[in-house]
Length: 387
Image (tube, rainbow, N blue to C red):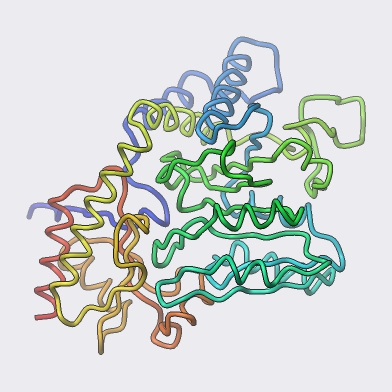
């Protein structure tokens, strides 16, 4: 019996497959090098450190950061967000965020509210899952220290008006943290034009690196307000028990996930060659194809904006009288189509969409290697199931 073809449409969780250069780089490091970064002066250790710094430089170039030391490595996007949130917020601070956020923002804010007494305002979204910048502006008070917003929803794919919100924050002298978990690698992000103070993202989604990688961009000067909540060895200033205050050592204690960073370095090199804009056009074309296909099936309700240009390659649907988990299981078992069903760790946006009590939605998320043929097979599979 021939093995069923695998159609992977869960790229909003993690990207698959990776570029071939990522597999090659990881395998080569494991077999030929294996040394830690910043912990030795022998040949392999120096080679490792060079790769780590090249990866940092490539990330800085991707976001148009002025210095590679503005890029801090983290273990995933959630880790990067926690570094920012726990490091910045103090008792009595007020934070503005939205109902669109992932639990990687919602839960740290809830913990900080319970432990240190911050106050949080959650801006609502419209029926497409987009917030209104005017609501953000009206929520500002004298204690507002931070605005944190996801760049694009991991449920609907809807791109948020981050430029307007960033300008509001800048004019009010309020820190702005951008959660680029879904947008990094999918949308061009230019720090020189987008006035963000902090940007957090994973390395394993749109950036196409391995799991266990993340990035945190810190605007120059913001590190003075950002406490390091993790301390330890850095391979520098080892004679001092005080955590270094220089970047990146202030936030990078312990051994790096070199295996992941090696893969991320190769992935960023691949993205440089392919071009984010080119990949974005590919994503828009396939998203249009998927949305048009779903629109031709009467029982399907799509959530989010109606045009692919206003969203990422993330499409969530509901089907009357079908539990999303059951539909996802049928797609996997009968057609080899892998999706994500449920609440996607984003309960407030599901409540806003009216899908919370129904167990969420079934989400289809595209990647750099998704093909038109796979989209066609997916639409036809749903048509067959719902016939």
